[in-house]
Length: 599
Ligand SMILES: Cc1cc2nc3c(=O)[nH]c(=O)nc-3n(C[C@H](O)[C@H](O)[C@H](O)COP(=O)(O)OP(=O)(O)OC[C@H]3O[C@@H](n4cnc5c(N)ncnc54)[C@H](O)[C@@H]3O)c2cc1C
Image (tube, rainbow, N blue to C red; front, side, top):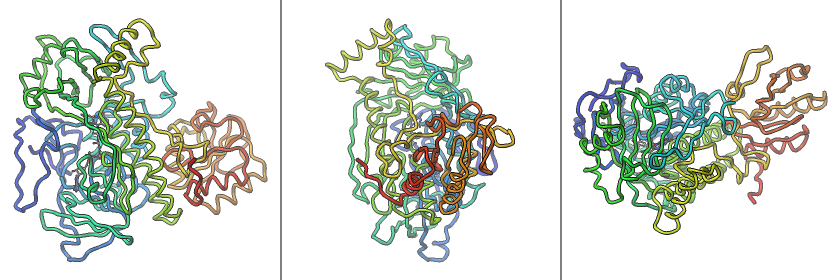
């Protein structure tokens, strides 16, 4: 399958291929083994998606024969590796990014991820690709859950948890490869990233000084060295074995079949889930709209179902007829079946290697927690690496990556495992519980909370981080305020103004002494300060903004006179009241300069 080639065709034009999917591997004149066409999917069908192809360029190691050493080498340009490379480029850090493939998405297979959360969208806004995602994707906030013929539960995310205060919506549905493609194009525009396609890491070793990677390419094999290696090679990573990583892993027998479909008549742009779908032998079904008017329909299959049988076009069409009526008029874009496992590493850093995205944890797709948390992993490490490499923080800051993102990983694995058990309950108490909740939910609102078709991803809070105070650790939404001259601004604009430094927001009046102290602190620390005022208060600080509706204060979880120390990843490091030694300590802690007890 060949799609239009980079950089000729803009990504928006790459919809899906008309040619029938052939499952053959393109040949190269070299012995280089091309990336597997189906990438772990058991069996695929459909016309498929045409993905961009990026050029292989011979690296300097092959032309000069030298082994070079780089501060940061990222392996894997999936959504996680690309987000990290883009975030580091934005912060002015040079990286090498290696990928064994020459495209985005899953070559020859479906889009995989479709649903992106507010926190990810806020991150993409900072990285400069949000507008493209919003223009291409589908915004949704209403979800409905059915059992049999009855709607047992519905929600409107705009009514929940202040979702509507952010400049980004609760969710956008878009095929994962579009986001990856936008990241690639943004990376090319930003510079700083040496993006090496068709570059497979085939061997690795590390000692106290550095890591050495062996890279296979169509033009030959070479080695390079790195101070920091980021393993973003996904769930089939070779780095676990190379580093001796230990983990907790579990595989169930639940099996699903995806159908990406384009209908002549569109169903409503809502997320519909059936726990027991009468048209799918009382098993679960998911229905979501994505970009290009393509619907993702996930059908739960019998545990022993043969993937090649359930993915056959006639079987899929039969299923669609049962769901949408015998006259349903639609085109099948892609079909693929999958099973899933859950897995969580014990350590997200081993020596020079940081594990990120699906290499750090694997979760079932329920709740969109896979890609979204990979994006959050990347955003967490990016500012820390930048701070360390630019000499703004000691190397010990990097230890907090494991503390924070491991806590998030454990939580996400636990939440998705609960959903998986609800959807494929074991005989006995689990099945009885599920039956009871469905029956009760039809009548009693309290029971609707117990019906678990997936708990959508959230920005995980950090409660065990040595660099966050007990008052910190929460994500700050991208809410609006007014710049001094009245123009509307957002938290992300403030973070861009802070330019990789910590951002200190001081709410309310300031005494002259406090103002002076702030000036002194800011001149000695990688910190930008801004005073946040009500509509009429007189400013003391030169840098000030107004928060007439209190949204900025609400987003920082403080009231009245207070300060909030915000990190470049939009997380609160600490909050407090007095401009005194506690603020100085909070800044030191946030930069990993003093360790805090994790108890
Ligand atoms: C059916 C399904 C639906 C999903 N829905 C959602 C959703 O709605 N929202 C969501 O957030 N997540 C979703 N996910 C999960 C999401 O797709 C994954 O979590 C995400 O792709 C992980 O991204 P990654 O970058 O960590 O790894 P990957 O996407 O797997 O990328 C790994 C990259 O590493 C490269 N690579 C591998 N080995 C090497 C090597 N040795 N050398 C060099 N390069 C290498 C590969 O070519 C690839 O580009 C879904 C998953 C499935 C299966």
